Amino acid sequence: MQPWSSVPVPQVPGTRSPLRLFDTAAGEIRPTEPGPVARMYVCGITPYDATHLGHAATYLAFDLVHRVWLDNGHQVHYVQNVTDIDDPLLERAERDSEDWIVLAMRETALFREDMAALRVVPPADFVGAVESIPEIVEAVGKLLASGAAYRVDDEYPDIYFRHQASGRFGYESNYDDATMRAFFAERGGDPDRGGKEHPLDALVWRAARDGEPSWESELGAGRPGWHLECSVIALNRLGLGFDVQGGGSDLIFPHHEFSAAHAESLTGEFPFAKHYVHAGMIGLDGEKMSKSKGNLVFVSRLRGDRVDPMAIRLALLDGHYRADREWTADALTGGAARLARWREAVALESAPVAEQAVARLRERLSDDLDTQQALRAIDAWADEALTAGGSDRGAPGLIRAAVDALLGVEL
Ligand SMILES: Nc1ncnc2c1ncn2[C@@H]1O[C@H](COS(=O)(=O)NC(=O)[C@@H](N)CS)[C@@H](O)[C@H]1O
Ligand SMILES: [Zn+2]
Image (cartoon, rainbow, N blue to C red; front, side, top):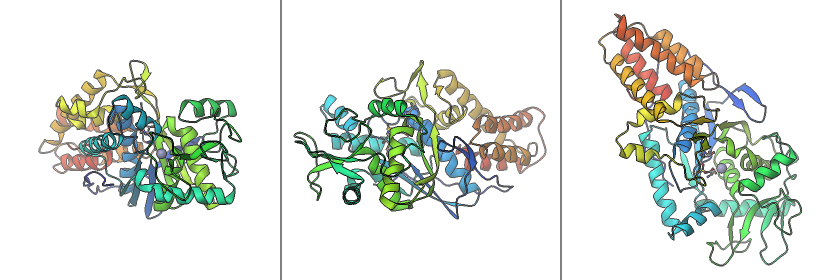
C-alpha cells in the first residue's frame, strides 16, 4: 500500500538529548538505544471511522518518537499496517450495507489525507493485512509444524495459537489471569469457543464461513487472525528485536502480548521489541472516544470546518501522551491561540536568544515525550519576544526550525 506524502524535517543546531520512553513490559522509563537505523512498528488503523482524534493523538505520539530519533542523528525505519480485513470492519460494512473493500479503501485514503494534514512523517512501509496474507499463511504453517498452533476439530477447522507456546506469555502486559480473560473477551478474543485447548488461545487462521471473505491457501480457505498480522508484517520488514512497538493502551492486551508471543514462537528468539510503548485514550464527555460508542470527533470534519491542522496538533500535544485525557473545545481554542502567538513571535525581525528554549524543548521531549513542558519552553520565549523583544536576528528562524523538526508544527 502507498503511504501518505512525506514531510521535510529540518536539521536543527544544538546538543541532542537521547530519547527515553516508558516501556510497558519493564513498567518504567528506559533509554531507547537504536542503532544507526532506529526501527519502529506502530499498529495502524482498522479502516473505518478514520481518523478520529484518538487515532490522531496516538499517531502524533509516535511521530514525536520518529522526530526525536531523526534529531538524534538516526535514520528511522517506520512500519505501519492497515487491518483491512477483520471482524469489526466486516461488521461495519454489513451495518452500512457497503462493500467492505470499498469501505476500507475510502477510509484508508481519508486516513492518509489526515496524517499528511497533521504533518505526520509517513512510514516507509504501509502494509495491508490482505496483501500480507501469503506471509501470514506461511507463518501459520510454521506454527502448526512446530506444535505452537493447533486446529480445532469441528465443522470450522480454525487454527489457534497455544498462548503458552513462547514460554514468556504475559511479560509484555504484566496483567494477571483475570485481567487477561476480561480484556481478551472485550477486545476481539473468543474465550468460550468450543474445541479450544485453553480460553486464552488466540485465533491465527479463521476457516471460511458462508458469506465471509476468504482466501484459498495451503491451510484451506480462510482469513488471518488479527494479532499474527502485526507479528508477520513487523518481523518480515524490521526483524526481531526492533526498538519500539507502539499503539494505544487498548492494544496492551491481547494484541501486543500475542504479537510478541507469535513472533517469539516463530523465531525462537526474544524479545520481539525492545520497548512496548502505549498512548493513553482520548475521551469525549467522560467516555473513551471509540467506534463502538460512536462519540467520535473526526480530523477531517475539523478540517472541513477550516480548523488549522496545526492547531489540532498543538491541542493534542498539550497533554501527556500516556495520560487518558479528554478532547474539549477549549483544548482546540488553546491550540489555536498558542499557534497564533508562536507565529506572531517568529515573524519578528529579531527576538531574544533562542538556544536555551530549544535546548529545553529537546530535553523535555527526550524525557518520555513531556510535551506539556516542551510547549511551555516555546511559550516562554514567545512571550519574552512579544513583550521585552530582543536583538538576535537568528532567533525567530531557529525557533521556527526547532518547532517544525521536533513538534512537527509549521509556523
Ligand atoms: N480513543 C482513543 N484514544 C487514543 N488512541 C486510540 C483511541 N482509539 C483507538 N486508538 C488507537 O488508534 C490506533 C488504531 O486503532 S484502530 O483503528 O482500532 N485499529 C487497531 O487498533 C488495529 N488495526 C491495530 S493492528 C490504535 O493504536 C488504537 O489503540
Ligand atoms: Zn497491530
